[in-house]
Image 1 (cartoon, rainbow, N blue to C red):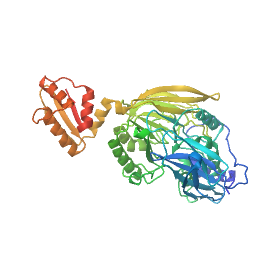
Image 2 (image 1 turned 60 degrees about the vertical axis):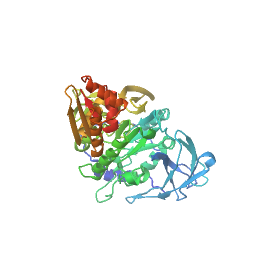
Image 3 (image 1 turned 90 degrees about the vertical axis):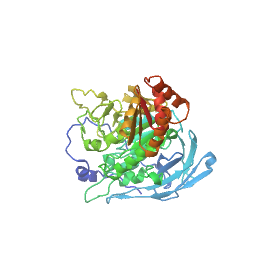
Length: 511
């Protein structure tokens, strides 16, 4: 049986966990919202149900029961399909033992399809979820630092009215800390939404839950309750639930979930995994790339200002060179949107950074922003709310921040974002950074430059160059076009032709 909250324990160890001194004063927080255990004599009744993506066509289903029972999911038409998994529990200090936490992966599943499911054997509770589409358009809901307060409840109400395919949560979920029963309350609070759409999360500082000497192991509750698909493919496993990636919309969108509280230094497991993940992504060429982390790299609030500068220095260039479109973070209990930035300055080929740590947390909002207002910060406000990132097609996405204003989801900030994959200038700049082999042919009125990452493609590019310049026979539409340019005195080449050749043989031509 799960233990009740222990306020005495909180008072004893809170300073050890959270650091007593802070550099800013928060406004009064909203009232906590505790969701009690169901009043039922059925100790196998499923609670705290939530789902998450596993690969392209599977879903992980997590739930709890007071007593240990079968980890079975029946799903589909007439519940005709069945999958089994495992269960486990954990203890925290001497005061708490979790309920039994079940973990089952089901599939393969069809896209854009509603599945009914039930948990355990002959459960009295039935659920349903809708799988995401396997193509664009695709809709994300984004909410950070959610917690469980009256403000959190308002945010969840607004999310319930939204149309989205996947929810992204950049850390600080339950704010349980040492008061572990708050994990159970949080699971019940979010169940109506988290059981019907996949929630993809990463950790914040509140998920650490480490107390030196007393409870030295980190992330015990988080890793057991909110297991993400870090090992969905053994060949690409990150080896840690704290950082991972996944694809949606048939591979059109690549999402990178980073761990602000996992080691990120050069040579660390996270940094090495990220390099490998970005290299794989380079081969797949998604149309959109999104990164999610808890602590923001750009922040003009007094709260947590420059707190994670070391992480930015360690990883920012990798995301920049990979042409990440948007970075979502939390941690700062306010909303802020930046223009495209890199290395502290405006850069048209950098990501749009968005802080959305305003889900409802128990600590309240942070209202002290830096003055004068930095130019790279385009919108900032200390209000609770959530965001929606709607990828319309390969080139455009709509970002909207919805403020919780008098219990109405007000659209307070909105902007269309163009994908960097569709920006020829950014792609050419990116390509030049990755060049290993290069050759320039000076034809007087026109220069043709072959630039390639791999030697075999480079050699193919040189063959194409000889065909274009008439040294070898050969013909196709693009080569004839280039040859005509050479023979008629050159002139600027249309960018679409340049990109076709870059895709075909890592080939760049310029006047």
